[in-house]
Image (tube, rainbow, N blue to C red; front, side, top):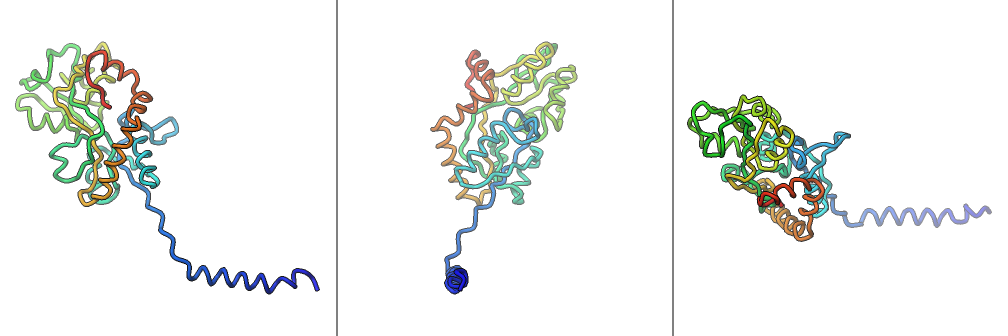
Length: 268
């Protein structure tokens, strides 16, 4: 008799035993769903795309590190800045990591992690504008550009009574208004002001020292308390491990040196 026929019954019994064992084996835990992180990929070097169109930048690296900390894959959702909070509230995304300032107004509808970066509002001023600081903005006949949905927009809307407020969807559009002399100043964060001044050194002046200090944080739904605790734990560990300093050295070496030279505290 052929050897394979001699062993066939044993093989059959082994297969049956495996099938029975599978029926009574405990169910394995389902893989954690991907962490959907919302950001507007239009704010380099924090949120942007590379030459191949893939998300990259400081915030993307933070999101990826958070995913590893949580043992979850990360999906970056590119959403216009003023649409991030609505997307979070309806569950389209799990959190926001998009250079978002934690403000009392935003905290009325979403929760925030502990701050992970310090920043503030600064001014990009036209070279021929008479503006010498934030106190010179709210004057009749002057025009101030802001990006829609930002803290600069919120500040100007609640503060200015005399100046004309020019609300634009894109940072580049606001900068262009200043460069062309159509706006006296653009209110934005100090790092962006520095970068835009470098691009237009003859047409602009930069007031880098913040006239209003702010802090960025991760945006979360108020009910997601467990996730918020895990995010805070991650941020503490990431900072202690030098993660933020490494990102600053990689993405912002020139800016770090420039701020240090002027005695202005840097972001991280």
